[in-house]
Image 1: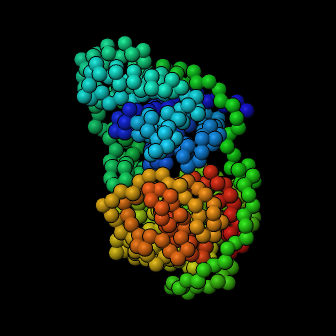
Image 2: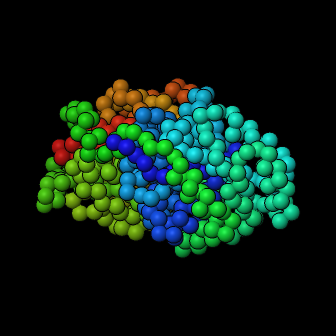
Image 3: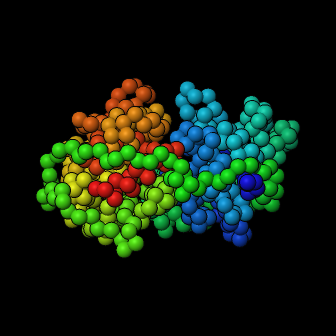
Length: 480
């Protein structure tokens, strides 16, 4: 199979240069021209893809060589970009920054090479003039396999400033494909973990994306950028397919025995029958809404391919789980911001506890772990786990190599996965009698909880790297 989608990688010398503004603006500007634009983000970021989706009307997808492996980057890209006229890939951090101590692994540069995509460098030019040429030359020549093919100058102060920058870059051999002036209106608010997600400010986010598109439309050479994207050579190989991935994954072992636990109110009823849909599918409820915005699109696709009907619900608004729920997935997000509202929804908290103590499979990552706790910043949560959660001043951030310590609804003990942590909260204790993961870095430790069908942890994982996780989870729904 030949993959011939035109594509660009939008990179920068460092974080804060304006990659998200430019990438999102380009996506929206090209979409407004009538092109089908496929949005992608390098790395584990969940928030930027929400803005990308708003700009393009398509699901924002991640390309993470650490979590998924280098061999899946092109197939996952082709899966997301199937049928599109153009793909725009927003980089992460600086162009050559990747996983700590792992060389180029998971860097924007590595992903650009794997996709054979031209790179456009977004440079914050606010405090330089002729030096910009040295900066661009350095990035363009550092790795000959990385094709730095254009520059977009951001935060340019005046016409005279632009003239000096262009004169300097004439000597670098890298063409200027855009000049953006300082514009506060395209800013998006941030807080303790980065930008505020689209789901929390949808109307304002629409305005922000429109402003980004307008600025890019006025300041960038869209025809030149499109021509550059079309110069990307064809890739060979098949697009990733969830159904094929699930079929080729190892069959799930038999369900693990449940561990004893004190029942909540309402009482534990181990023989409660599991409803199912008329066609025999099990319903897997996936938490969404403003408090739970972190998820990879491939997770729902894998669950569906494994035989589940995936139904999204909002813990801030819905007082019951979806009809027929046989399994529950609660991903990441910001429950700490909405702790009073989540706590006030007592009917749903009880429904979640009843499902969990009834033995149904529950996969909870980060925010999900907090929601299953006894309390979060003093606010009662679901009480599935006998842990207390609270905000912390310390940021925990980084990739992790992990091994499953306990048999669970997701994996058998010994299964190796890679994950990512990103939070400013702590839970006490940090691990249960049956921990979820053993983590190698930054220090050796165990973390998380396996309790009956519950697998709860701070670790964000990408199931495309281990499709058997989804298959095992859905099988557990059928046998619980």
